[in-house]
Image (cartoon, rainbow over all chains, first blue to last red; front, side, top):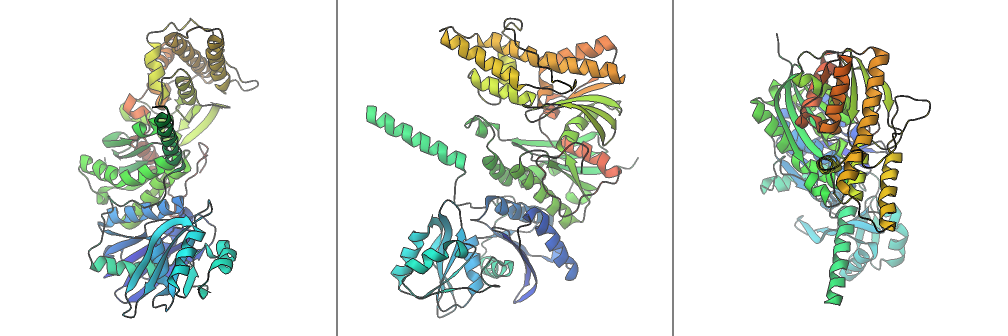
Length: 244
Length: 339
């Protein structure tokens, strides 16, 4: 079983090929160059180095959101184009779950935090139980950093943070987290397509795939225009209510 | 003659489109999924919403284009995609999708300029049309007067220095309460109006005889509406639409005529969304007749954003040897003739 993993949900661009229990190759860049210029050349490099016949790929795993809207779409359109051309299914891996899977087997809880701007973070809370099973304690969400810290404090369990939100929220974490905490080191603390592909293997075994045509990322957020329109409508309804 | 088959993909604004074109002129399919009803809610195209919609529709649109052409991706000789100009978010969807398909299928990738696509739409229904000719490209985002020297070789004589012609239609439509998209709505309202009822300015751009300016005209329309409001008078929107439209058409026709004379043009074409405006078409047609110059225009479905035109332009780029790399990026302000 060969899985191609693609993650371009944040600043990092990452592609990996995982076959059964082996990682055949991974290419990860943590650099500001646009994913449009890096992602496919990186995959091309992997293909050449691995003498990879693209038709032997069984499924394409993609970071399905949340993340940078543009980043998600470049990864999604790439995965959808590959799925269409190769006639292979996609595996939509929630971005934050994929990020947490970097810390497979961790003895602490795992809290990925991505910088979501507007004072928010894309986050969630995860753990590997004593049998090695991956547990989702708080489903991925877009919340204020204080909200997830409160939940972490309620668990009374040590936690490891990772993600591009760590440098952004480090001070808040140091001030407010009441349980023992750690920051994941370089190499483990950003999106890795290998981790995504590993998690996708479980999805695939459970038959949780989506067709390339139907796949769309889950942004966890409306566009600004939709948000403003809904707010305006709500306001209008409230005003109507006042006068009726 | 061997057949060169191109899959064209276009997503530069609010239309998700794919087409199969053979030898640049024979359209085997032309699928367009429009988002206009969605953007009407916001009074114009919202880039983030457009980008999201492109992602949802693109695979279906491509599959439909192949199915209608009765071909598969394996039959294609190359994949052509619009990579600019346009809205960056929407462009990126088509570019990433096209690159992935070409990569997976080991096919050449050809990045196409959106305006070059509009110009090339004229080749599809006019087998006799060959460069050199003059082309007026008018749409919601562009107003260009172009000398087509050869396939893929252009000289821009003039362009708008502010609003595009189609943009002026949209803004005026909004001001008189007609809504989005403005072009067809203003045209319809104008049918009932007197084009000489209101005097609007025909702007000239100092020092560049082929450039256009429409923001002054737009302001004149808005001032007229405000003036009437202050005086408590009703605005006859049919007269206003007709007078505004005539002001736009006059300037466009005037520039066209001038260029035909100066460059001794042997053919003249129009292209872009506004090229389906019948007042503009008639005016330019008459001007060309007077000069004895053959006049070309695409049918309305090929004037709007579509992928058949990208397949047509892509074919000529492909046979000229143009190839794009896997690092092809969207270029929102791409200039015609640049790569």
